[in-house]
Length: 587
Image 1 (cartoon, rainbow, N blue to C red):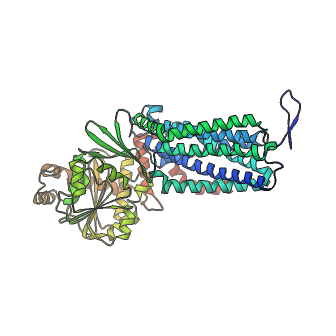
Image 2: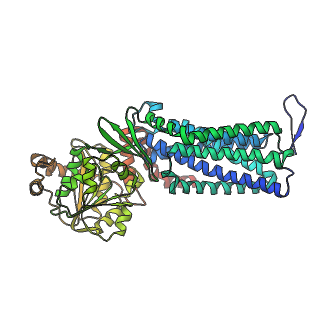
Image 3: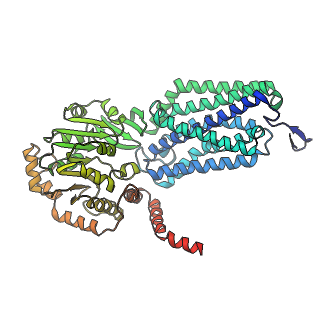
């Protein structure tokens, strides 16, 4: 029994829910609260993942934006736990607040998810696909994740307070934490393995809301019947609350089945502005959106434009593909990692290749492209020389025993940890073992035909130095995108040689020929770039020391967020000084 004195009233005794319960009644009440802890843990994890993925798309995400969103979620969740923890022991009716917060989470999670689509335009006027600095990401994500994260954090201390009369304060805290962790792990696994590709994000958020409201309904149903004396609500008030919760649940169910689809479509239209959204897919690896504008389909993967059909940028694609393919005298077997449909495969198939193996981690992306069949896509996927493998590129290389004459990476840069894995020393070593005699590895990186900025130079330098550790011959062709060619055999990158090979293959005048090749492959320009890359001191890129990812983030910061660049430079300096600071602190 605990006593409370209301302002201007006589002190009276209030029994906490659970005090005095014994036998099966106590066991059922305890089990129900534990089950709700599992639901809260799983709902918090899935809600966090849903918001993270939506904001990842809105803010052209990489690990910096992901870290900012996660930091805001954890900050607000900690604030909620702190606020509720300080008040839990003084609350006269903790069960009321617990039920109220469950209802609020059920409302605020889908609302935050709806607003997160197009957050970059809603808050700052940025266009879809436009890169955003860390300050706007921080402010927008803080406003969006604050309500659900704060509420979710407050539920934990209240759960502990409700169970403490039944189990004891220390036991209840440990067990609630255990059950909530079980729910968190289960929710994360279910989302990654099944739920992510099953339904759209708004529908999943509404399903989580239904689970929380169902928990409220069962709590309200249980306590008045089994422990009427210990529940500080009259039967009439309890029935009113039950009716309100049930009505809200039915409304959410309506949204989930009918209106939810409407809200989903409307939010996508608001997110992508004047562009018509013709396809949406939520895969285990990312979000795919196809928009239609001016007769063209553009496919966005996690907010980044990756494929345009039926008229891709053939000048950029053809320049890279034809130079790389012409660098080999007879590229019979070709491996393409990422970036296949929408131009790459089509240009490669113009060469006398016998087989092209296209490897992509996410099968949802090629499936989305084939939904809008164009002559270009049909040529690429119906050609008998093309074999498509849905697998991680490094895993494929590790498992295959095949040898390739030419190995190409699509237009990806190491600006995420996922893509950085294709530019590390470990990958270059593996690629070298899978190349046939005279085989060539080719990839491209951001460049400039006039002047390379310091961060762009550093990014290219880390790739160059890491590549040199694993290949005897490395050639870099300067341009808007620098082309890296590496082989164990000598490379004959001469304009006259490549022009002759292209002419023999019936590709004379196809993007790269004649005077253009002489300009593109000018030895003086290549020598100048090579000297700059050699002179630039950088760390080598490896799986456990992702220097390529670090320099890519610096290049990203230089282009879009000068404040982030300053912070990254400061962190690098602090890393060099941390030992001295630790010694000074100890002395």
